[in-house]
Image 1 (tube, rainbow, N blue to C red):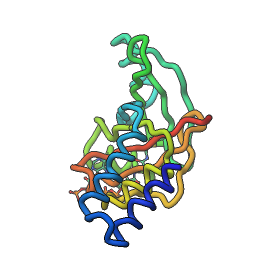
Image 2 (tube, rainbow, N blue to C red):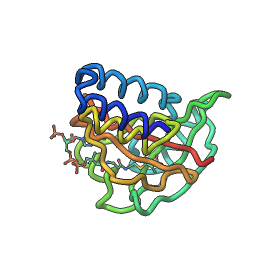
Image 3 (cartoon, protein in one colour):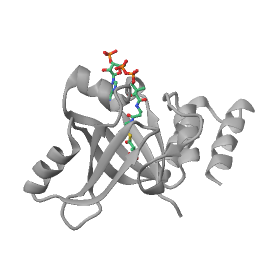
Length: 168
Ligand code: MC0
């Protein structure tokens, strides 16, 4: 439904029924309706166990841990309070991963902010229509069997935005 609505907006502009600005606004409105909230912020850390200990000492709780070889990370999800907010601790599992590169260049810190979306394919289509640089042609596997994709920080104000869709 969402992807069909996005293509209709584009076709209406191509047929000169609506202006480029009006079509873009429709795409933005659809994209806005696909956003559910901030799922997590991802912190790059050199050592997962040490980072988990530090954030546990601050009162966060580890609720999930897994290794993702495609992304080259070992990660722990930390709950902040009783709500749904999570901090994702990301340590490199191999020296060529994005997290290893980030740590080399910038050291530990906030590497990404993740938005939960209702339909990740539609969100990626809308973002591309609006000129954002979406990294993967098709979503890949993320935490807890989520689908993930990313918007390149160069097209996004210097912030790496992750898109997350939970399994049904
Ligand atoms: C790089 N840059 C960033 C950045 N990474 N800026 C903000 N936030 C980041 N995370 C900037 C650099 O400072 C540089 O700017 C320019 O982008 C190119 O940097 P680079 O070091 O050459 O980096 P690239 O191009 O090799 O890689 C950047 C890219 C990569 C975003 C394509 O990190 C990537 O593919 N990320 C998506 C995958 C990922 O992050 N996986 C780890 C989390 P200047 O100004 O110096 O040119 S896995 C995950 O999160 C999963 C497990 C999950 O949640 O389920």
